[in-house]
Length: 76
Image (tube, rainbow, N blue to C red; front, side, top):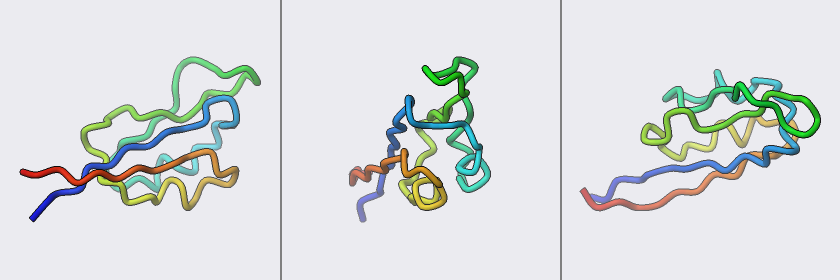
């Protein structure tokens, strides 16, 4: 059976760093960056990309809809 590998893309300039996505991630993939975006917010990013399972919890809870989730089947 094929495994699913997940990945997220965050629209950095629209992320306001509310941190709602951080506890929503069951595999602790997301953290806030030390850097800030153009509006001065610390934005979310994939700190541990290999752990992403593509569950989309982060995208569901994001109040601004700035997270896109991708899933890819991986044969292993």
